[in-house]
Length: 238
Ligand code: HEM
Ligand code: HEM
Image 1 (cartoon, rainbow, N blue to C red):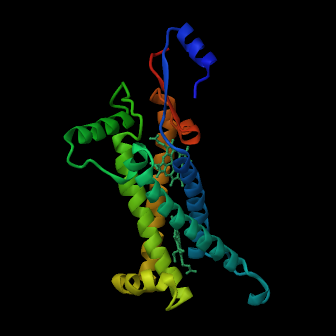
Image 2 (image 1 turned 120 degrees about the vertical axis):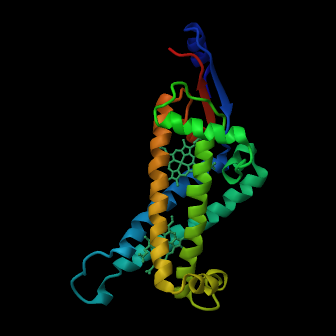
Image 3 (image 1 turned 180 degrees about the vertical axis):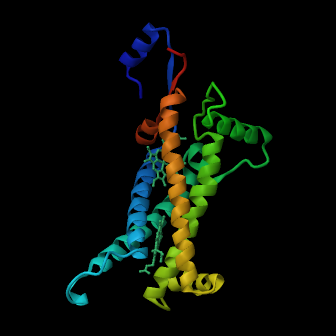
């Protein structure tokens, strides 16, 4: 939040700066734990798909793939439990905690603002709009690119995991039993799970670029908001 001194300095220069508390602690904590889990999943998944060149010596002397797969599965559990906690918080948290899960699809004004944001990102608009929560384009991307991909990766990931833990395990009962037949066979699930990684990486690329760009250009705080929870609005141009 702004200190009194910041406020006084801004006022002395004839500017007003407002701060609004947006993201509560569980949302922020989840954001960064989730980002870390996905980083581990993408790196370990990469090596599962393209293992390191063969190691010298007896196979039983090294456990490199074992550690890589362990990291992947542990981060997979973090992703699942994190999402469950985040869904819980959507029910009990403030209204911004629900934004990622709900799209006002039948609201014309919202769609107009999605297009406006698109034009703003394409450098076709001069004056950024300000939002307390996510802007409509970010909201759309978080639902369609992030949330749907995450659910897909959890479903396909635990379906593959259940093949190892075998019949009778929860992962096999909940996922493997119907996901593998749905896709045809195990290799198809591997392939689509792999494609899902690229969908997720595409979201992250756009997301991190947009967060950095908005922080610099939109005259409102972005990255520090996901750290402190407070959104700062820098109202007047310097
Ligand atoms: C694996 C990497 C990441 C993923 C999957 C991810 C995903 C997300 C999601 C789903 C949200 C919405 C949060 C919610 O409504 O609960 C969000 C918000 C946000 N993320 Fe990330 N994030 C990642 C990395 C980063 C990084 C590295 C940064 C900083 C450069 C960042 C900055 C932000 C900011 C500033 C917001 C809030 C945007 C706003 O206020 O509208 N994220 N992120
Ligand atoms: C963003 C999330 C995730 C990413 C980016 C990711 C990435 C990958 C990639 C690239 C592969 C290799 C696929 C192939 O070409 O064969 C893989 C395999 C696998 N993943 Fe994931 N994954 C994610 C989530 C999960 C989750 C939540 C689980 C659940 C435990 C999981 C379990 C597995 C399993 C069991 C395999 C096969 C391991 C093997 O055959 O040795 N993944 N993952």
